[in-house]
Amino acid sequence: MSIVHAQSRFTSKLTSQCQNCSLSALCLPIALADEDINRLDQIIERKRPLKKGEILFHQGQTFDSVFAVRTGTLKTFNITSSGEEQITGFYCPSELVGLSGIDNDTYPITAKALETTTVCEIPFSHLENLTAQIPSLRHQLFRIMSRKISEDQQMMVLLGKKNADEKVASFLLNLSSRFKKRGYSAISFRLAMSRGEVGNYLGLAVETVSRVITRFQKNKLIEVDGKEITITDLAEMQKLVGIADDCARLADLNK
Amino acid sequence: MSIVHAQSRFTSKLTSQCQNCSLSALCLPIALADEDINRLDQIIERKRPLKKGEILFHQGQTFDSVFAVRTGTLKTFNITSSGEEQITGFYCPSELVGLSGIDNDTYPITAKALETTTVCEIPFSHLENLTAQIPSLRHQLFRIMSRKISEDQQMMVLLGKKNADEKVASFLLNLSSRFKKRGYSAISFRLAMSRGEVGNYLGLAVETVSRVITRFQKNKLIEVDGKEITITDLAEMQKLVGIADDCARLADLNK
DNA sequence: CAAGAACGTTGACCTATATCATGAGGCGGC
DNA sequence: GCCGCCTCATGATATAGGTCAACGTTCTTG
Image 1 (cartoon, chains in turn cyan, yellow, green, orange):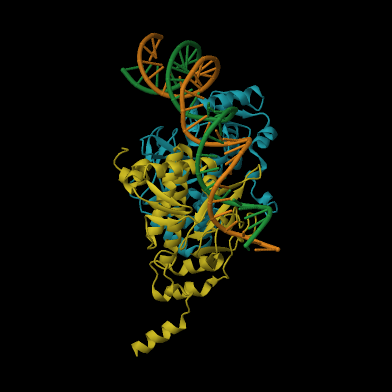
Image 2 (spheres, rainbow over the protein chains, first blue to last red):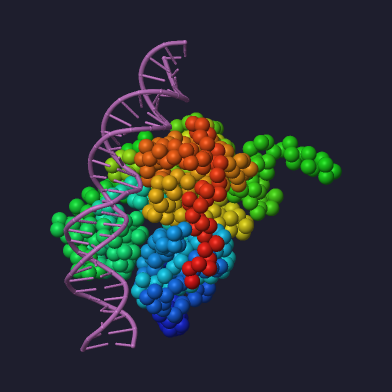
């Protein structure tokens, strides 16, 4: 009987259910009981894939959902007074986009696909209701938002205090750890974004990004083949960035 | 009878109750029913004032509470790899500090008083429990966190794309609107932070901040007397910053 | 109230990175 | 499968803002 149960349960889930999703351990369902995952599952809509360059939501558009990236990569950006775009983030699988829209019921940024990308749409009003009933989901959502705040603040430190080398090294190591977290190689990966987008994000000119990458290659820190990056000297890269990225370790340094 | 009720209710509240707090319309209690404010009130602890330079919490310390500023001003900062501090925010009355600590149960930043400052301590586990029962409180907390994410992203744009003039102008206008929101003058106010702290926050050297401020004075944009600032040409200042700070207005510009 | 420390301003100079310019791949579209 | 465009790399040059130094002013503290 338990077999029948398991079976029916299995067949009733198509590949796009949270239970089967290889990302569930990183994404919203983390720490949820099976039954609760089901409830979450029911409010989630899987959308047709976005092609490269397609837009998920626009700056100024009415907010109604947050989105979990399933495959591919997104960027989010603002349009500045002078009309140029300022990229505020890149989003990889399992990451949640759109949380900044809750405040004004309006997305303050645009989200655009860097490559073919699939997302799960999570209508926020439903999610919010569910959080009333599922404490661990509520806590998880608070944590995700809190982490986003911390990360953005780290980014502020990067933009305000780091030089070009440190910025690029931080960026590469950050991607590395995100890939690692979801089971890919931490030392070898493919950039979904162009040099221009990297520069825009880091507050650098394209040319500077290009030169730094070339220099890193010459100094045998990384190997590069177009968008393929291999970190060959992780230790040296980490030294470049400084230990401060590990906040916890500093706890006793600032009394 | 209703008079007695009102009376007893009044006398039962000391000055440090949410109901009597002049900030309640801006702070967490916004949109809460009286009875719900009471429940919130009960979990909040008022702390003795912090003197200038005292620390509210340390980077690395275990997270247990968020804090609402009642009077005074706080700054939050990180220590970078090279040991210098990078300021990540200034907090004025009614604003909530410490939300970035939820994620790791650890504050990733230090919060320090810039002047004599009083705060309300809100133990987060209690707050989280209350949000299960009070939907409007839950929504308010999501909104506050969401707004923080938007604001930090605006800050990233500022750090990544703006020049010194634009940074300083943005900073002054930002303070101006925060003062205005809580009923103070939008054109005349006192900076709680030093030029050095402004520079640190904006990714500029002290000298640059000083020079920009001097230039603004010469150009009759502002008047300055030490830490007292008066904005004399608001329109020109806004022009300097650009219209893009108003995200909503751009909704139809980026199709 | 005096002395030292911290803060703020201003000038001279320097440098990291932006900008401009050019050319070489590489990719998408017809 | 070719053309045109976009991306990337690299050199030459310009510049915004950093750094260093000197000095006045304003807090702080004994």
